[in-house]
Length: 358
Image (cartoon, rainbow, N blue to C red):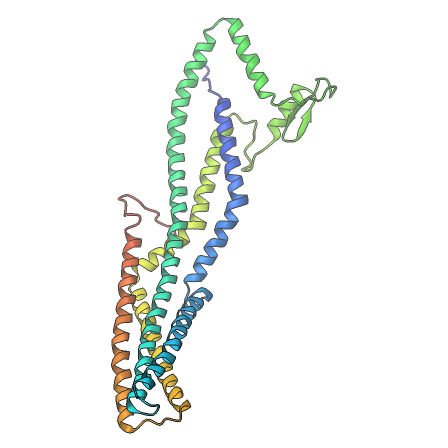
């Protein structure tokens, strides 16, 4: 007849660690998960074309330039008058047009920089959030491997401890059992006269007046994952359930954000779109500047001669082309650098694979 296989129960320390981990996870879900979800929505919304944040940034950039050049306009006209260039003269008229051309260039480049700053904030926000996700994924991996390693080490330690205890004299064994029962009975309340035991026993907000009722009640209780608290494998089952939920949270919360980063970093259309927006900002700024110059001169009762109109057209055309090239180059360089920074942070790791997750 073969010997009956014995099992090693989980230690109080293992159960306490599982309870601590469970409480931390519940606290994070209650307090920090809503904050993270709200931040994710804000960052994703901010990065979209036509977002409120993007419109505000480019609008403020344009307004800042217009304010500064409005002051410069008055100073220029005063300076021209002081040097003998009267209103309506070619020098005065072309001077006003040239300043408007400079304003348009500054406006277009400033709007492009503002638009790029929103892209930078969008990418940095995603990187900050996905770094949390990578930490959670690493924690899941560590938990899976660590649980196996710790269980193995703990099993050896428990077996050795059990052997030592079984080989001891009866008095030592009795003392150990007595201590274990006392620990399992939990916290005793200070009240007296409750049931057959002064103070009674309490667990999960419920009081029991004798050890049998306490143990029976505790064995029927379950934790957040539905794991029976009286189970001999409570700690292992709790850690396993926690690991599964952490992975599910990583997939649902962080993988979509990682995919946004991957899309931004690898899509050639991102650079093209960025350059197109820069060109649009410049051309719209020059269209507005030409119209503003005409209104300014018209306000003085000035009509440009055909020669002056041709000179003004050349001035605006050349400045527009140069500003367009400069703005597109700025947008291209900043966007390309940003894409490379995403691909290099974190550096690709051999063997890293989340196949099937999209």
